[in-house]
Image 1 (cartoon, rainbow, N blue to C red):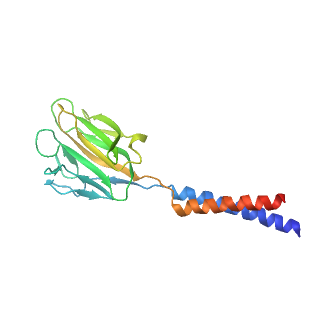
Image 2: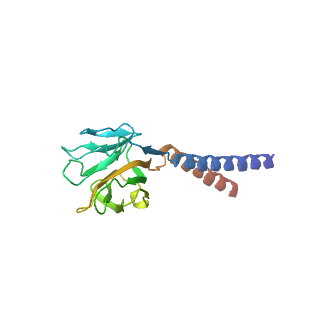
Image 3: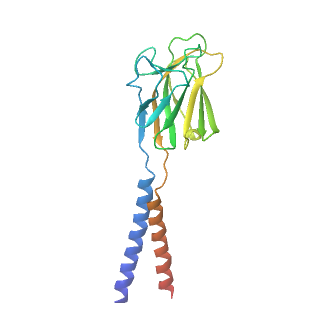
Length: 195
């Protein structure tokens, strides 16, 4: 009879531990999304949103789809599109990559990407678009609430497309509570076994 209870107790312990581990694993899964600018055409002074990410032009400025619709253009020449701020509707996000397009600017076409958490600058990266390329961002662009891209002073214009991002992985409170209960149960059952 005692052996039956010991097996049952071991089975319950393993089950609780497996359930706790699975809940943390699934809570940390983030889904990547892409802003393709597919609905952006011409110029607009309104923010553009897609898949929860919002691109906002400067106050009094515009988002400009150039040289073709479905991409965003930055130009330091006074067209009112010197920078774009990206924010995520669900809070913190990770910027993964972006396609930079060389669209005929004279000289170097450098972009300055700045990651913010609140008012604090967390990281920055300068990109060059002398040819079309995809730029990947590192861990400094994770867990942020805003990204600003602007032209580096003294350089020419460029366009961007396919902004890849994901919600920052944050464990759910319920998953953490379940893990705590499971570990607490293991401690209590272990103390009963020793007694």
